[in-house]
Length: 195
Image 1 (tube, rainbow, N blue to C red):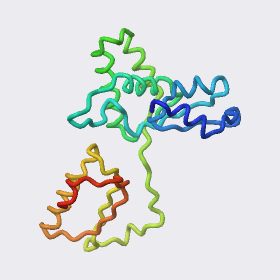
Image 2 (cartoon, rainbow, N blue to C red; image 1 turned 135 degrees about the horizontal axis):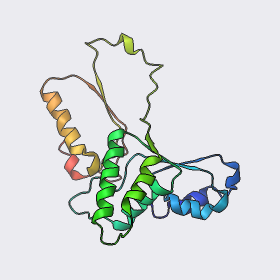
Image 3 (cartoon, rainbow, N blue to C red; image 1 turned 180 degrees about the vertical axis):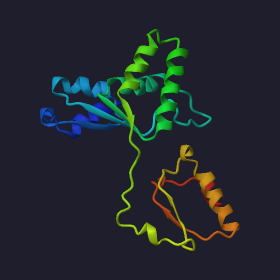
């Protein structure tokens, strides 16, 4: 997030952004910096907020990072439009940001005005699934279900809970297929070996 705007410009090879109708970025992009670096040629920016720094789970050793949380909030203010991946995410984010703005002694602004500014240009677009090639109508009650893990193997995705749940399902006699799609850590943790 801290270097994202510069990285985008580097990858674009300083292209003329006049030729772009829109930039679609994730919540890991520093939108205000990107707009400033592109300048007057900057097309409208749509921010897709698939996660955020205010409600993102922290492990027991992590502390909140004011600067990162501030960038996260400024992203929703600076973007021309903000899309959230669910209404619950959007609601939780706006509630968490309100607390962040009210509880931080470093912030002395009219938080309601800024929150309204961010909320008014936001909406929800759920991740879609194209099922046209899948004969959903022909699946029987006796078909073996498939469980898909499409997450990173990091604490915030709770992989140990997932593994323990799979073991409980196996011990209970459930028959299923398993597809693991998530990114694997370079050096797997010893805590997964027992599973």
